[in-house]
Image 1 (tube, rainbow, N blue to C red):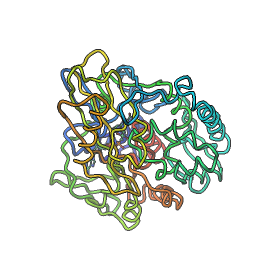
Image 2 (cartoon, rainbow, N blue to C red):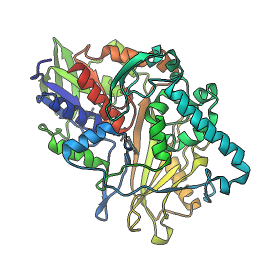
Image 3 (cartoon, protein in one colour):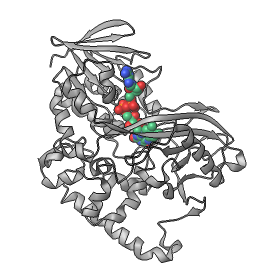
Image 4 (spheres, protein in one colour):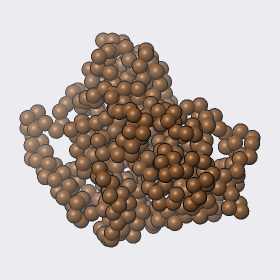
Length: 451
Ligand SMILES: Cc1cc2nc3c(=O)[nH]c(=O)nc-3n(C[C@H](O)[C@H](O)[C@H](O)COP(=O)(O)OP(=O)(O)OC[C@H]3O[C@@H](n4cnc5c(N)ncnc54)[C@H](O)[C@@H]3O)c2cc1C
């Protein structure tokens, strides 16, 4: 493609800004990033409180965040944040140690079997499901893999593996099929409580591409990255470093693609481009663009989660010692309850803590926002860490994905076949997975494949 191609990127979250970086590194400097908010970072959102930053959105990474590391290197920054620590409580607020055999004598056989199954899952992922962990979902529904390995060298890998079709099953059924049901008790912590839905509804492909074996073990061993100035800082630094900074407060009211050109109406003015990269939620593209029948049909299948975050103050005597996971509240029958609460700074009690709850599940009525908030605040009281005040709250449009039927019917291959068709490329969370690294890595591959 001509290096002077005029490229419009919609969205200045991790996907859009990293697309800008990879384009620039490949010699494309004629790109424009349009962001509707008055700040960059998207769901990496780190507001200030009492002189420090806390996280309303993304919190952490793992050492295999290679694309995020590309950004760190490009910007000369590093993951310099507070060390994460956690403990567990049951739904009555009692501190428990569910994985410690010495504290759970009666559960020893169960814990031994769980350990065996975790080992077995690790083995079958490397053998029976070879190729499961490449970024993106190309070919999976047809029993193929094609992409970059999650290794420091990020080698390009591709091949046939009919077993990969099993990844379309909900993770619960996938585990049953492979006799590794107990592994869900380990994977659920960094999956459901991080807002990615329940194992009876979410295809195994999402669970295992994000929580590939090594990444899951990094969560288990708390081998994690955080950023002192918050995850938003990563993307603020990237935006500052790019030759073309994101244009904030851009209200896009129309996108028209005709005669090999893309016309974008921004704040009332029509701008002309050659190519479009959409990193904003694809299901809303038809609201402002001349979406074609295939785009409308495919993007209408996208589902999403409602993940609610509260930032609360507590009295110093009520401040939690550490972050807590409440496993009892990570099943659909406890929808709308507090699943995790997070204490970011250990050296002071004058900071907020943040709470996390899901209120959407495939087979259950969505819980209204205010009801969920009330439940979470009640749960904090049960945990003996009552809030004295809510200082910030956000209900996120979270983790866009498709369900098993559409996944198995080849949703991803149909969307991938449309890449470039209308001078338009699709990136962002739904194309890979809803975390910082998978979205940035997908943008890297998109630039590599098409530009
Ligand atoms: C509570 C929470 C916790 C999380 N924890 C983690 C974590 O610990 N680790 C991790 O890696 N990830 C985490 N994530 C997920 C991570 O933040 C997202 O997956 C990532 O930000 C997705 O990047 P994106 O660019 O695809 O989308 P987004 O971050 O959603 O960015 C999209 C951007 O597009 C803009 N936009 C939307 N529509 C338009 C439009 N019409 N015109 C112009 N601009 C538009 C939005 O304003 C936004 O800035 C978390 C997210 C949340 C909410």
